[in-house]
Every structure is written in C-alpha cells, then in structure tokens.
Image (tube, rainbow, N blue to C red; front, side):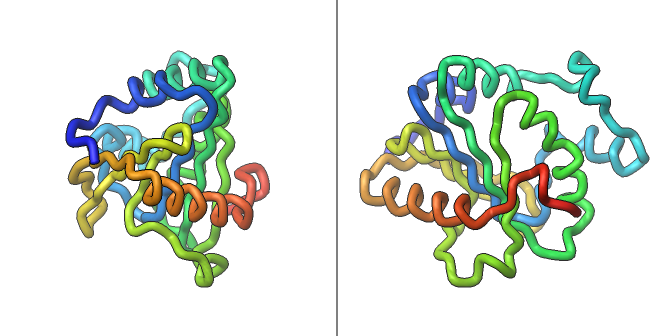
Length: 174
C-alpha cells in the first residue's frame, strides 16, 4: 500500500482511460465547500452559463482528463428522502457534468443486496484506489492509497454494480 497521497489533480492527470468515484455518505463536512453550502442554504444559486463564477481547479482537472479520453464517472448512494446536503449536491452536479463527468445516483433502498465499500473512493485506471475517510459527522479525516490488485479488483466490481443500477443525473429527482 503506497503511503504518500498525491494531490487529486496529479492522480487524475496520470490517468489514461478511467477514473471512477463512489460516494456513500448523506452528509459531508468538507471545508472547501462550507462557503458555497452556506450560500446555497441562503438561497444563492449558480448560473451554469456563467462558468467564471463556479469553475475551479477540480473542474479543470476533470475537463483536461476527459479531453485526453479519460472516462470520468461518479456514483452517489443516497438515502431517501434526501437530506439538505444531498439536495445541495444535486443542485451543483450540473457543474460536474459540464466538466465532463457522468454522474448517477442510487437510492440506498435499491442497494441492499449490493456489497458497497465502507469508504468513499476514487479508482484510477483500475490500478489504484484513493480512499477518503470521513468522521461520523461528515468531516474529512484523511485520504489513503491502495494498489493491491485484488483489493482494486473487488472495489472496481463493487463500483460497477452500483453504476449499473444507478439512475442518470438527468433522471434523478430530489
């Protein structure tokens, strides 16, 4: 297991064909989102056509990867009815789509027979996993890397099972 965790943009820049992201929490307390989430709660909404107001380094990294031919997919497993944070994420997802991500949502009630990893993750080129560990209140704790082929294979299979069942963003209503 690799010990150092390169920045996300570096990992994505090294991808040749795929990057998949699995999210399984209903609440995240990510400091970089605090201001945007508070603004959203206060009624502020972004305008998709006004990219300079919301486009950031994450979107650029995804867009660059997609431009190189990397397929970037995100699957979110969510409880229903969805809570406030998931409504916020849903409202921001068109930004991810505009950057080139394909995003799907899987209601947790439809995932009971699936084996879902215990932590959120990114899998890069089916060779490397970056697990994101969160505290019980949704605060980010740390990222850890894994490259054992059997672990990567199991998690890639779990992602694909979620992906096959999940609902495309355009069809998922909150």
